[in-house]
Length: 190
Image (cartoon, rainbow, N blue to C red; front, side, top):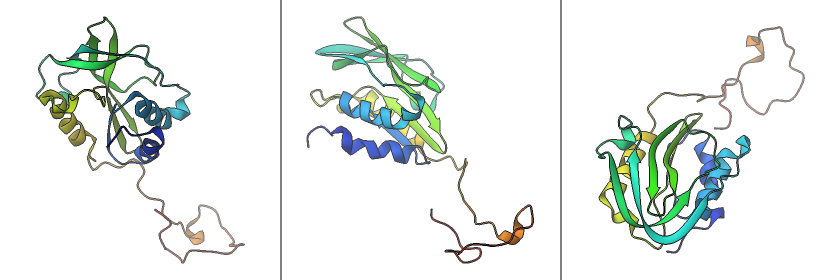
């Protein structure tokens, strides 16, 4: 299977905001940009980055060792051959930065960022490219497992229901004037 095209990933962003836990991963820069632009469109950011394909070494530093996504990871880990992504990374300010990368060519990048949107948790993790076998790296696999656990629902709800309120329970007296498509106390669309 080849790299995913941006239009295939854009639905993920629409689903992330309402409440499903999500662990986003940079499969390819076009997928990254499409996903993040969808998620952050309301914030007016371009999600642009600089990049280079040179098969250079990346060192990922743990910025927040207490974060559940960093559990079991040493101070840093290295990946021998990667595509470089560099700052500026035009995204909204992350809620947390878990990892920052240094590349052999000298650039740095916020490579593990989290955001919360409604009930949804979003984790962006930079490593990933169709030309390099990054997903076989034990540390990358551990980060992804941790991220899935972190993104899973913790049981707290931001907005979980949209109950129908009867006209007789309105704060002010109310006369029903129009047609109804739902029966009394019937749940609406979810």
